[in-house]
Image (cartoon, rainbow, N blue to C red; front, side):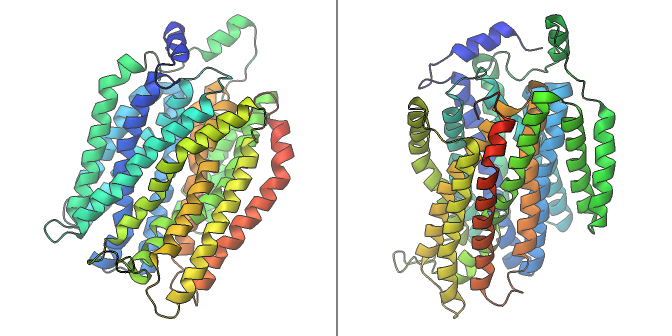
Length: 491
């Protein structure tokens, strides 16, 4: 069980630029894990299309299924961490399995390819939601440093996401190495992250991430009555959701429906009153997040192919030899690194003046910026539809606005979940947040698979302009409701 004294020590720590030292450790750990994930992600579709000669439709479909499962399993891993093993052990288990997956991908053969993807999916379930949950655990309730802390943590994510495609893309594109060296480099990144975390967790995160077995006992001692999360709620919800998902037409639909139903059953039926209102708010926000990530995740599929097939990779003559198309996967993360400190400063400055917009309002802005970015893709697609290799400026401009939108939605959303979630369901609710990413990645992959079926690229990218602005408008209408549901916390 976590030690209250150890927690107090971490809460009071301001030695890392005003934040706890443990934030730095989690920053580095997540940096290397994201190096491995984004390094491999940058290669996946290009490898399948250019090396294995898959169609764009087949490659995008697999990409959507893979990334869906990568974001689906954290819900299960979060629940196990909450109830049994704690976030600390979960990170170590997940890191080992992820590394094994990347090294398996480095082997030749179709069986190794699918086994490697499967291992990464399982390992990410143990790792992804729990490292974000630990960031929330190093701040006391009501600590105004939390949003800024998550934005700093987000820089760690994007440092890895920036370096991964550059390193893995270079190795994959090099005649001296090849695709499988790129996959192996991703595995090395995960091993470095695992070593860093194990080395520093006792020193920088004392008491953080151990199982929370004392929640009900503490409530009983104080006279509070907290409903127990009945596993049957989850089983019942999973059965209903699984049936509905299967009627949607696939085994993956069954899996997605079962997990969504299980999460709803446990979180909604296992709470009441104020807690239930807060959980409901998380599910509403997660619904709108689906629209954001379904469009944003075109980066690894249709926009990756746009860079490879339709973009001038000599950058208008700036370089003599075409750059690897996978390098464009680092553009977004590079912008994140540049603008994250500015975003953190803006939110803290507005908070001091009591002018900071609510999380929901920030997400409305983020969806609007995402739609703006796709307007640049529409303009670039007009030239591509005429058979031209268009300027890199259109792709980079789109990534620029997508970055600004991401800064208004993703790190703020991570912080929102840790603030609004009941303590007993902290990791489970973080899993729900990633569940929205799972649904979005499946949807995004399904749409990306249509890139060669829709008559023009201009029409294809217009889909995301319309969906992003429509979601922004609908979420704007929901802002007052979300404020009422979370009135007991500053969100």
